[in-house]
Length: 239
Image (tube, rainbow, N blue to C red):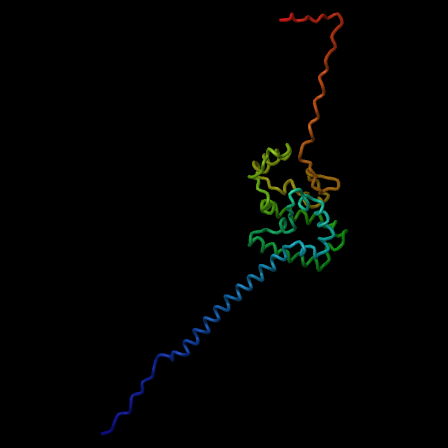
């Protein structure tokens, strides 16, 4: 009587060692990707902050030789409080998404830097009105957010302001929904030759204390008519 061949049993489960090895590789890969993400984010933020510094803006002579010189003569550069607003404070949003959008749009500026669109004072003067209106339009659209990062209308001490400032701020800024740039177009740079009707100076654009009223002139003394001749002044009897 013949014997049956032995039954071979095949293990369905894979060996444990290769599984542990794959899990280890996967864990290391995840940790490495996480570390690379953190380092990349840190490098990106450092680079982004560097592009917001004043020194970065002055790398372009178009800015250094034109608008920066004007800015140095304004109250945003030197003032009694010693607080200075640099280029990015007014021209780059602080919120992350609007900041990224602004940086992407700055690629157009790099393109014109290569083309030499405003690389001479004459070219800059010719394009100045268009450049200014583009920036005013942007600030008008975001309700002068860069101004409001430092200036809070709700914290204004109107009693310490001049009569014209109080009128403009109460009637326009707080009541009519106007925004800072509607009136303060020449606060940091010289105004182009466009009639703004406010804050005009000679040379234009220098921040002057024009909103405070002039000191009141003392009232002239009242004229006292001379005592007519023959008029008797009665003396009161002594008590």
